[in-house]
Amino acid sequence: MTIATRLDHYLQTEHIPFQTVPHVQSHSSLQSGVAAGIPLACLAKGVVLEDHQGHHVMAVLPANNKISLSRLNDELNASLHLVKEAEVYQMFTDCTHGAVPPVGSPYHMTTVCDEALTKHDSVYIEAGDHQTLLKLSKPAFAQLMDQSKVVRFSSQVFH
Image (cartoon, rainbow, N blue to C red; front, side, top):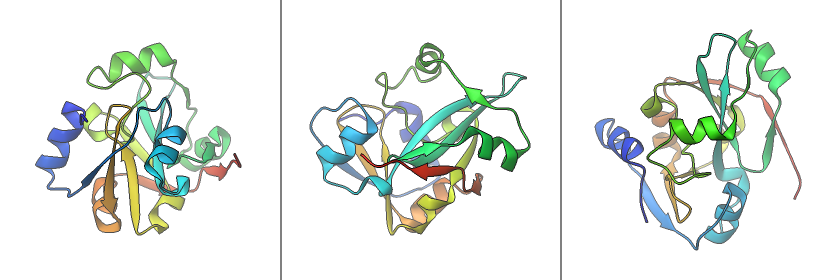
């Protein structure tokens, strides 16, 4: 059980309380949620995007949702596209590949949060490995997303 160094430092510095939730090894946020026995709508995943100037944005949405780039671009008046997986690995060197925490600030990027996540009593996030989730209360998650723009930009995918 490991929390990514930058994420852990950020949570400690900002005094954001959390609980660790260990689970069996997984390979995706969906598998992590199932392994930990939590509702996928309460599990936040991060998608790294980039604009035409090379600025990165962390889009945070429920694990069981699909991002709508057109809706997000309309909301932000931007032209964002997905960042290639290999580049994401280079940006998140303190994380296991594929276990990116959905928090932009420790990685020097703007964050946008889907409003669907703001409705839950608790939200879970990847800790940076494939064996640990962090549980944040509603106020702690709000504090974590404090500098984020909150808009609706995803829709539920049924699995």
